[in-house]
Amino acid sequence: MHGGDTGRYNLDGMSRDLLSREVDTVERVWPEISPVLCVPHTEAEYRRLVSLLDDLIDLVGEDESHPLASLMEVLGVLIEVYEDQHVPELSAT
Image (cartoon, rainbow, N blue to C red; front, side, top):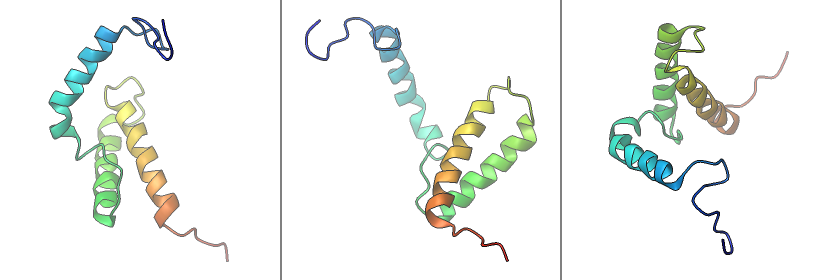
């Protein structure tokens, strides 16, 4: 191995072939999921993510083993980042 080369495996021990297959899969499905997994830059994008998260909460509930549970977490982080940057904190009166 030379320089930054990590050989056949990345730092997490995943083979490059597996990573390549995962990237191929993401590239194929990205046009369909990119509207869902985007960093919101506008109020409309933010509202769309909040609405989607609300729908997922109704569907998934507290079931952490549900296939979409991790999507809820990702959406929550994206929404939180937007709110931190764009929504002023309410001051206690």
